[in-house]
Image (cartoon, rainbow, N blue to C red):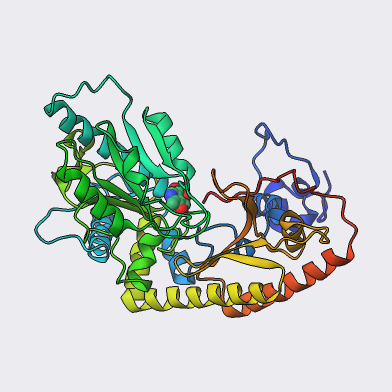
Length: 468
Ligand SMILES: *Cc1c(COP(=O)(O)O)cnc(C)c1O
């Protein structure tokens, strides 16, 4: 076949053809089965990259907690270490040591106590961390209950959590056969209700989960208060309960922004904590962490030994082979930012959240539900106005036209009459981008006020992604 350069052999063609002058780019490749012939790398790259063109710009995605920016040096070192297998401690002992350092650094941030022996591991994200935390609680509960002579099969074991839980807890309950006992949130609290929580606890309770940073609103559960309630409860019964803190977002935020808030291993009954390295730990997805305050809260049955430098190393993760580059990215950030660097980044993110909350309140249409006081998350709902023809879903669509992804959704069960829009501020949403966003929001509202809308009747809710 005569191409741009006449009748050349295939090697020459592959080398000389411009990408969009190549025969391959001119053909439709099969989508759901392998093509017969290989495709030249630069052309394959372009074809795949082009398929992703209209995905939206991650930096303008204000829906996600997950990191969308790392420094070029971080990108580089992560790309260079993609071939390392995180599980293979004997082949990659240096990588294993970096993971170990990360666990120690995090233990220090979360105030592990000197008289206890903490343990921890990296995970794929908080979801895996929550599964592990939940499993450890289940196994530890069973050991305690059997010792006390409880008929452990008479009832399903249960886990107590506020109705603002993230969906991974529902998965945990389903996969591992646990009853999820949810404490309803009310409008005053919008977090775990301390007047009610202990009513949900009994001998079959494997533990209580406190959330540092409810995904929907960014509010912190009052873990110190919960600790007191648990302490009081444990005085009255041999069936002790303990707390796991799901600090997916707060675990790398509160230690820098609110060091005075006690939510971590400073509290006696907090036995394990998970967090997402890929949220405010500032690493690309997927990396998470879970730590136990003492090895006695991690039943031995859940620990497996892998060989390591001629010796053995305990592992407790659910997943097996995966790239170590996220662990290395986390360690890079720790080295690069240090305590003060993290604090400065989070402080600026916090300022952006406060700025957005103030400016959005000034627009006059919205009532602020969460102003970024805890996590840098701004939630607002529409004020009541019978004249207005549009709703938050219409506004989300308008903003989408300008590139921004800002989800609108009803709050979780018991508060689901309230529809909110939520902005997750991340480190890479700088003040200049935030100003542009406010301008775009003003324009979008102007356009909506002038339009005759037929879309999105208020009773039909659109689902947007908001769980991560
Ligand atoms: C994001 C989140 C999770 C799940 O975390 P992944 O890192 O996405 O697996 C769990 N719990 C809470 C509170 C979260 O915000």
